[in-house]
Amino acid sequence: MAGTSPAMTSSAPIGPPVDATPAPRPERRAFDGAHIRLEPLTAAHARDLYSATHGDDARDIWRYLFTGPYADIASFEAWCATAAQSADPVHWAVIDKSGKAVGALTLMRIDPPNRVIEIGGITFGTPLQRTTGSTEAIYLLARYIFDELGYRRFEWKCNDLNAPSRHAAMRLGFSYEGLFRQHMIVKGRNRDTAWFAMLDSEWPARRAAFETWLAPGNFDANGRQRISLGELMGAGGLG
Image (cartoon, rainbow, N blue to C red):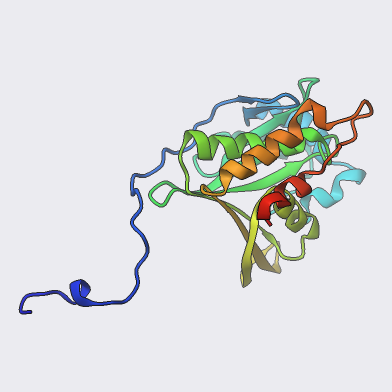
C-alpha cells in the first residue's frame, strides 16, 4: 500500500512494550536494618573505615577494586570527602552495632531512562565479612531500588578472576549473564568482566528469600544459620 512505512509492514520480531517512565535517581539517605545501618559516606567515616579495611589481614580487600589500598589515613580521608560529593557512584558506609563504619558500597552506572542500576565498590572490612550484616546491606539497597525507585534491572559485575565475588553474586540471587573479555584495564592489568543481574520480575522471590534468611528464627542460639541463602535462592527454580 502506498505510503506505508517499512516498519509497519515488517514481520520481524520486536520487544514487548514497557513503561518508559524514567526511574528516580537514588538519594543520599540512610537505611536501618536489624544488623547494620547504611549511612551516606562522609569524611567522618574515614578513620573507622580505614581501620577496618587496611592492615595485614585486609590486603585482599583491595585486590580487584579500582582504587586502594591507601598509603595513610590522610589520603583515605581525602578520597572519602571526594566520594561524598559524587552523584554517580552514590556511596554508603556500612555501620555496625557499635556505631563504627566497617564497610562501604555504592550504587553506580545509574541509568534512569532504562531503569538500570549497578551495585559496586563493595569494600567490606574484616569485621563485616561473612556476617549477617554484609548480606543485609545488599538486601537494603536491592529493596530500595526495586520497591521504592522502580528499577527494572539490578547489575553486579566483577573481575572474572574474583571467585569470591562471583560466588557472592549467585548466593545473593543475581544470575550469570556472560563474560566481557578484555573489558577493562585496572591497575595496569587486564580485566575480563563477569556480568550478573537481577530483574524486577525476579525480585519478589528474591526478596522473600532474603527475608526468610534474615529472620531471627533462621539462626540457632550460637548464630548458625538453619538454611543457607543459596538454598533459599535456589528454591522454586530460582537458579
